[in-house]
Length: 287
Length: 93
Image 1: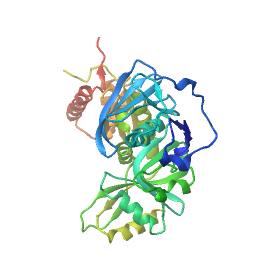
Image 2 (image 1 turned 60 degrees about the vertical axis):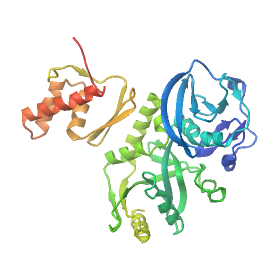
Image 3 (image 1 turned 30 degrees about the vertical axis):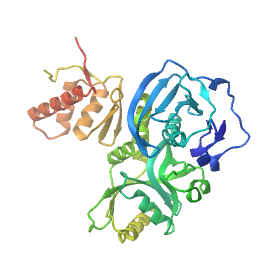
């Protein structure tokens, strides 16, 4: 059993996960007694199709009170304990398996399993890129292919600090949204991971929704009403299709509260190289 | 047929949040979200506060410059949409 602290939360996994090595905690062992079997009976909660391990796969969550069982086609099953603290590989007979993880198992563990385990603890994983300027953190939300990574990479090369380039875990509290950037960014190689060099927690200053613009349009940043920000947060939370009803309700509450706490902007983003310096200036004026 | 005299309630499987002038509804049985704007959100708020449909209609009539018959038609159409999506239920009897 390996012990890590990604996204400011403690997790125990069945065996070492190299991608989480920067967040490993040495010398703390959990009690293993309660992890011997997965509870039964199981009841199907959600079934969907999602990109896991580079392929579209059927993904199911099963209610296994008091926890959840995650099944991804072609991979191992993972049982997540009620508080999301333990994520263990489960055999079909309900026994917990200590065996090593395959490549696909690692993708499941670091993808939907970790996202679900975090959600059970009130930490939501935004599918986003993010960067800071003068200690102000801006998160960029967009559909795939709309330029989140390109923008974040450009900003990182122009004096900003890259914070995330795929997943940004966030929480809500009375003072606003908090980001938890010490989290593996699977799109980046180990040497480019920003998380290990960042504070565990950063206040989230702005939400920026990237929208396509005509190639010849001038980039523009415009404040949007909180209602539009709610829609953006709902749409860009990873793994939400796997949430059980109670989790969905808590997630909606989080999105609604956060949208009234954090200013959100629409960024009309023409996909041409010379637009990036203009966007950078626009964003810096917000900071 | 739905009328303003219908007794409606919000079922337990519906979660919602009011944000500014919008309301965001979630049917946890279907995992579908619905966004209501301005008048729809206002009616939702009134129903949630325990107002009857007719009382909600009267409040909105006092708040907006709108033809009464048009408002009635629009609200009933809107409520039929909510009924179809399991977001409100008619209390029988």
